Length: 245
Image (cartoon, rainbow, N blue to C red; front, side, top):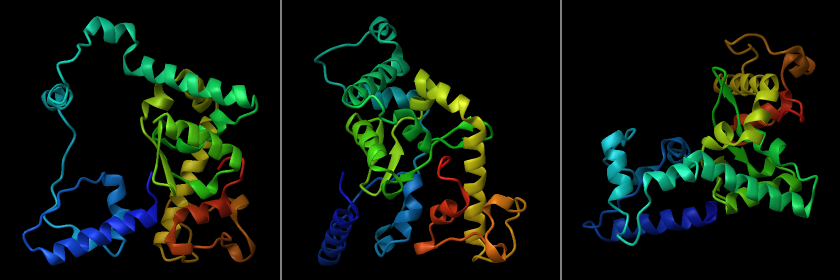
């Protein structure tokens, strides 16, 4: 996947093209979870007349699925059920990727790596973006395989889950999430604290969620951290034990 340098080159080309031709229009789509990052770049002014696309209803889903399909073949409902539906296909694919990784190295940390992408919100697993720099070489081997298999996505610097069904439907990861509930809940809570603390301009007062846990404090009562470019993840590394992150 293209990295930040490639993205900047594309945005720069679009900016120059729009300036050169007032009749030119560029239509693009952007997922809502990437919008905040984009608005923080020098190209935020490129956005004009934004249109919000909400969750598709049943009718719209049928249109999205049926209209692009060519007449070269048909998948019946029986075929779909025999394959186990989306969950069955995804699980089989994840099993295959895992088997290939462990055939090369039986100690490959597949599940512990994927748990990094799972926070708990209101007791339910959701998705968490992970910076590539936060991963060990062994963990990067795992994520590379799952990106290649299209179960994770990557913009070079940041990784994300392509399908939340991965940790809801794939039995090995679902069981790992269940076994790590307390750790995942604690990590989610600490991340929220870190984000609140950063938004409060690094004030000495603790976030409104409550006091910082004693284990997270350093001399002077403040977590030790480097807030490079305002990323809360850096504060998290100061307060969360490595085994949880």
